[in-house]
Length: 384
Image (cartoon, rainbow, N blue to C red; front, side, top):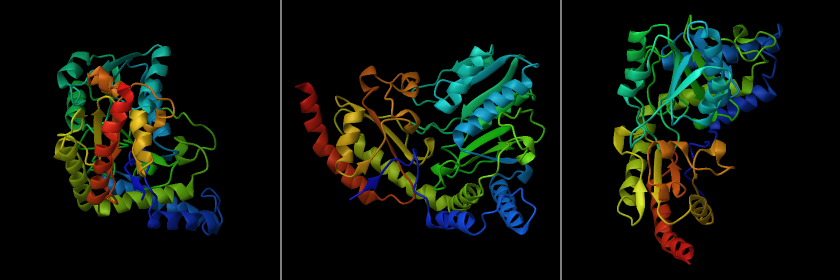
């Protein structure tokens, strides 16, 4: 038996996505910049992909640019916006719970002389509007807030934030990392006053190494990948047609069945939270229902190291995460959990279960059954 509860790290590619990727690798494999028919056919995939994603977001297709994934998209948004707007000011605002692909570029910009403010969060990881209001000044040029936290599933008040910062200064660039939100909820950048929105393909059953960034018209952004001038010079390099076709197919599949998929994942999340909450020594960090993302459950297991529990469950065919997959090969205490002021004894005893539309209640029952068997044994072993 194999049970995969690590869908925040990556997802299985669907049959429809696999088919279009194979088609563009083996049949319609031309370079989209070539003028012959092979190139024209390849370019059509790119054009249609832009339009499909633009239709989902209710934006102009010319505002969609394809990248190699969420990390590149976030770097492009943050470094590109900071560099393009540095004459207007020097201050950047973000939060203490951002993904490394946001926090690392922020630390890079600090070294370049920018003032970066990392806003605190509450017990559930929600940014305080009051803290944001205290930090907004005339020198603020960029605000970057994630839509859904990748570790605990917190949904940030992105529309409220966008409305406020634009009322203070309409020229402030507003970036939202939607990597764990896209495909799980309806997102309309214009309604949220969002200038830059970033997405990754392999979180939504698309291929790895794919992503896109929405760049609102007239947003000042410097390109950070230079070369042949593809994608209007904003992101040079021969377009990854198989990946672009794949992420567009994955996005279409998600949003064609969004309500059904979200209902499935929310049911799974709430069911697991209900099973974990009464268990001895277990602290759940995620919220039920619409208060949190539909697909993420973070829980601390007192007396058991997260890595030990991860491997114990793996031996039973259950795959979970000990934190963000991008840093899981170098275990470290979670900055998100520390910002949420989680009990210090639980910082290295917290794991994440993350679901997709293919998971089932029966899988959760099996996982809970195994937890009830494993936890007493693991705790007894630790006490010795």
